[in-house]
Image 1 (tube, rainbow, N blue to C red):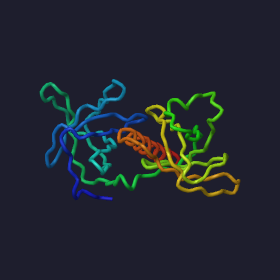
Image 2: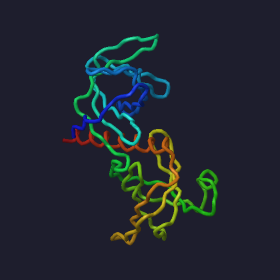
Image 3: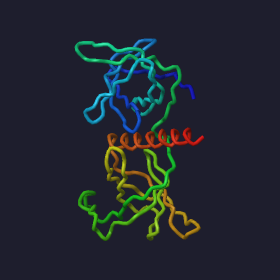
Image 4: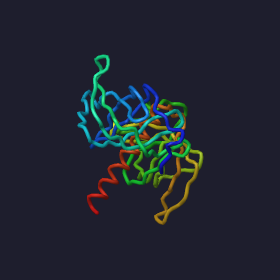
Length: 223
């Protein structure tokens, strides 16, 4: 969907660049009507050497809104000894309200345990802890997840969840908002994240977009 109305790139605004199996970090350095400049994207200390004409998928963070678009590299430049990439200003963007987080379906085993007393998350997670259980992750978004759980749980229970992402395992706290029995008599649990800071939420959002990109690429190869 084209939602350029209200779309602005701001100097020092955060950019995530999706390339192969990694998410590179960058920031907006300059903006004009026809182009914008960004710092050379970096991932784990490595720069992304994009060539002229190459296209990349980009997520731009703007307060309560995310923008997704395709960036086309025009050229390079050095400004105040800082190497930069010049990209064509996008003519189409997808606007995503953070209260309407993009949700992606998947099937993956993850670990969880029930929140007990007022212990910190790091005090509860141990690989040999008998209170840690396996669940099947069915979908995930920046606001919550859906799990299939065989153990007895109920609405308003609080779970501590280990979500494996390409940036490491995220230890999250969530409240069960609904429970439905499936055909196997297991619990399908809708869970809303609680006590989540913005940095961790953005890591989850990056994880969601990365899964979507990989699923789309896999579908194109098969089809």
